[in-house]
Length: 229
Image (cartoon, rainbow, N blue to C red; front, side, top):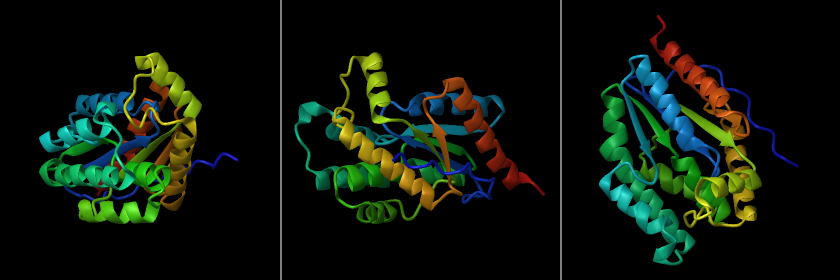
């Protein structure tokens, strides 16, 4: 049985009054990078100061970790090492880029964050969602997004999109079988059910333009609540 997506979250006051932190999550092939680019362009066109970033990455150290942990040429990586590498890159990302940007009043749009580790390493690798979430809460000093947009995609759909995009020559995680990606999808949906006020769950099979409009509207609603008298 397919888990039911969480309802659209109502506008809520931002966790970071001096800035806003928006994260796009979802399985491989869901269109996160496309939607991050569209959202950043829309917000900048409205005059907002926006930082676009990604995980793993966002800093020189994070980009090096990305190469190490995702490139199949580096050979197999055991689950605990994988989880720790992601957490280390995330700690640097938060301290060096995300928190300073939020403190400066900027909007940060990030392609993946801690919930990806909970889904991929916690559920997909079998390390335990709660254990991996605790590790990343420590690594980020408790930083939580104001809004997490979950682009929900079936494993087979994501695989077909990756095949069309790059011929199937994906990274180590993208190359995992559909069963692995089905597990991570269920984990994402369960995380969303636990925090419906933080999540916006969207069917990623819809058109990119339609998704972009709904995502931008949700972000504007959050920002409007914060600036309202």
